[in-house]
Image (cartoon, rainbow, N blue to C red):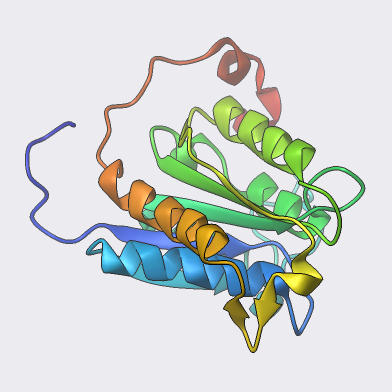
Length: 198
């Protein structure tokens, strides 16, 4: 840990990469935030349905609500990224939101990953998100959470399986525990990530 004891509770922000009205990803991400709250954090769910984020145009400094999204990510002490699995990866909605951000918002920040799938275990979704976060020099938790077969994982908005519920809640707890971890040295990937610096 760096800087001794934190004077205030860490603030955890979760980004939900789903635009569905009845989103299993949103349910799972909210459960992860409950774990963060139980660990003493203040929490906030950034629902991308509520923001106007056109496809990123690097020739423009600001588009739609991009400044508001960037500010909320920047002000968080730790971030949880929740995404459905689309075509073996994470959602374009979340990718676009991350494209608006860069090293200023993510470098040295603790990030927890959550993936939700209608089918099998969403391994590649988690791997691809991890690669993006590493390129931004974020500190990505080794612990990650996945919800396969999401249509049968919930009942009345709550997890059916206690072990899965515990794993997702643990993700929230861990982002709080490691919110103040010392930054790693820059990675090779970050030095090659020209897009974030443009």
